[in-house]
Amino acid sequence: MPSERWVLIANPVSGRGKRRHLVERVAHQLQQAGRAPELVWTAKHQHAEELAGIAVQDGATHVIACGGDGTVHQVVNGVLKARHAGGAVTVGIVPLGRCNDLARALGIPLAPGAMAPTLLKGTVRTIDLGTVGDQYFNTVATLGFDSLVAEYVAAGRPPRFLTGTSAYVYATLVNLLRYHPFEMRLRGDFGTVEGPMLLAATGNTSSYGGRMKIVPTAAPDDGALDVCLVRHVSRWEVLRMLPTVFSGSHVKHPKVSLHRTRNLEIATQAPLSVWADGERVGSTPITFGIVPNALRILAPPA
Image (cartoon, rainbow, N blue to C red; front, side, top):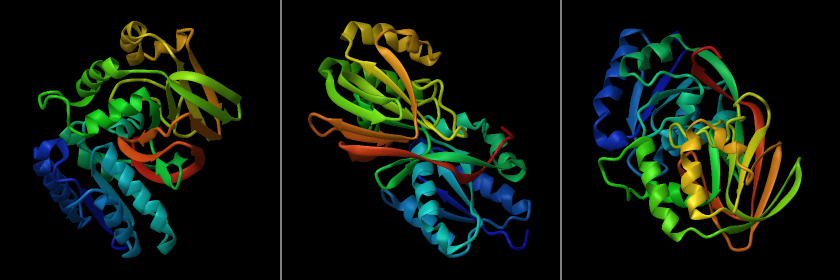
């Protein structure tokens, strides 16, 4: 263990600033276990990626993202873009965000008392990562209606008393008022699909918004991306479909199709924003890919 160097990167406003003490408690528990962690706080947008890159360049062996999926997204990108500077770097997660979708996908407990033990006793697993443009993503990349929803939530527009999945449901209902179909053309291993769409969700894992299984067939260790396409439906049909997303049974709807691919190109009639892991990652036209076994991560056994 003397050769290990642990760096915790924490978002001080995660959970609206109410979870800072949990990060400090995890750091203290790691200290008691002999890990001597360094705790650094983000101070601006995208700062976690910069701090993760610096940690790797300075010889960190374990970089721990303390926050939500956005913080994890930035830490993963910082680690992978700088890992040529060192040897194998392992990422850990202290899940303190709104939805914690990657932690859920990997079976990482969300209970405060389990956070430090998971880091100390977790298995080093390797998982795939999606790529979008020049960035990596961990969970689901969104395009179309669900990007409008992600943008609405990221801007903090839902009422403050709504958190996690409830904030996404509220944002869905509000954004239905301005919904219109999006003309898309998608090309992948499955061929070409085009026409008016509600959304196109590209998953390395199955869920977004906490418990919304938008791409139920996706798994982070199968070497492929799974794409859920929802063609244009009425607002009423969206309302009827929404509850079924929590079980993944929306895929039975005749306007929904699932596709598996290693590469995906999407073009739209007008530029549309693309979001992944709760972060804006670009706009169309855009290309997605998959990097198998890209990330070493601490988690319970698969």
